[in-house]
Image (cartoon, rainbow, N blue to C red; front, side):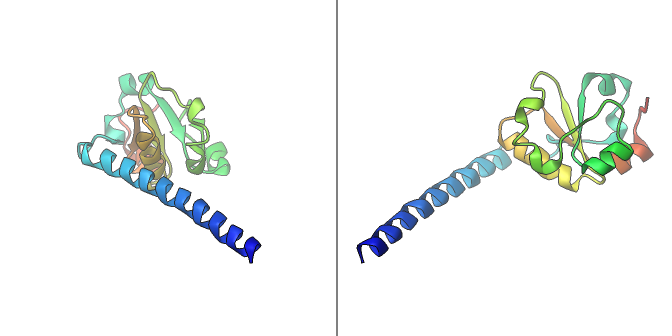
Length: 139
C-alpha cells in the first residue's frame, strides 16, 4: 500500500508540473496575441524586392527532400518542427522570413518563434509557391 501511495503522490506532482507548464505556455501565447498588430507577423512575396531579399535570412521549413529539390537561393533549412530546438541557428540581428509550400506549416513555426521572443521572424504568406509566382524579386 505504501508503494501505491508513493506512486500516486509522484504522479500527482508530475501532472501538476504539466499543468503549470501548460498554463504558462497558454499565458505567453495569449499575451502575444493580445499585443500584435494584424499584419505584424507576415510578409507577402510581392513585398520582397531586391532590397528586402538582400537584407533578410530565409528559412525553408519544409522537409529536406523539398529543400534539396528547390528553394529560395541562400535559404537555410530548418524543418518547421525543429525551429525551437535550433533557435541558436536563427539570426536575431536581421529580419528572418520563414516559409513552407503554402505558408501553413511555416506559420506555426513563426508563431512558436515569436512567442519565444523572436520579434524579427515573419512568415511568407502563400509560401514558396507564392514566391515562385509573385515575388517582386527573384535572383
